[in-house]
Length: 430
Image 1: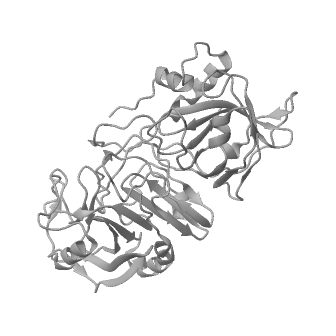
Image 2 (image 1 turned 30 degrees about the vertical axis):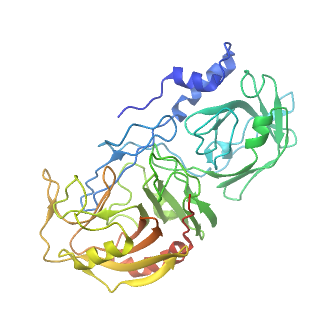
Image 3 (image 1 turned 45 degrees about the vertical axis):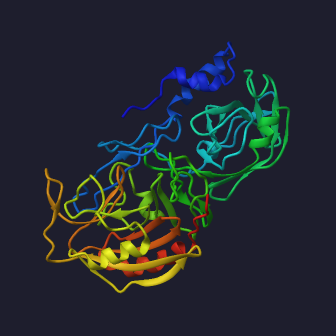
């Protein structure tokens, strides 16, 4: 799998409508900004004590969509990211402006907003770097502006190349960050550029993920949040849908992944110790709530060709299959609702007499549980337990909410802490 980071494509996105002149200051800023163009690779995991990892590329979420899924076998080292620990107050320049504070040096993710002349807009994200703000609509820059802070503390955006915003146009906006920096709010302001005035105001979520090629939210303040890339209701070719999952967390939580088919939450103290290099949700390592989109029944031989023939993808179909699986011991299923949708919960445990193995090269004893073609493969080791909630979204779509713990004896207590969060889940229709 290749990552399209060539300078020519970045320049093309920057120029939008084809200007022929770029100032040295713009050129240097864009050169600095090249590494912001990423391929988002989805990583599904074999869940086993040896942390064998099966990874794949699920979608390109900043450049272009790849034509299908591909196997991706390396775990990339993550950048050192996370909430800012403090910043020095910027010093105003002679023109009354100053550089951006460090608290803005993150991607900020928002919903799609229509822009005349652009199609296939599936999100509206802000990328601040080197004094440049790029408004990104899904791998393409709608416009790029230089960003400074005025003497009054407002955000000033200036266009220095012609495009959707004419060269020299300026806009000024009041802005604020939540106490922990996780939510950026930009108020309507005054702007000579109509397009910028239309799309810039609003609320954005900070992406502070510790895993490279993943715009997960990272550490969270207490409050309400939504997913940005996760899509539990796939409909043809994937596209980001901001808010396809909404949830509420108390203080002390973090989002560890946000991919088209997996969304994950975890205690913030465990996430803070994560170096970004290993499999975050492999068992025996960390407490986690993993939301799997459209799971199917995994074959007993850990095959990658498909799901168990004859087993449907509905919540009740999967529960019936789990409770009859020869490699599992299960609790009595309990019915409830999640986000107004029918849900069924149960605890599953790898049976002591199960001898099936996965991975021909490095076999380990495990019970394959959930498999999604060209995506994740979830397996359960003998003696290990998961708390699973299967939510029927209607229209043939199902999610599996898997609660796992670093220490198996903590499953019940962690499950109680996770329960209010799971009960807050909502899955809005398209």
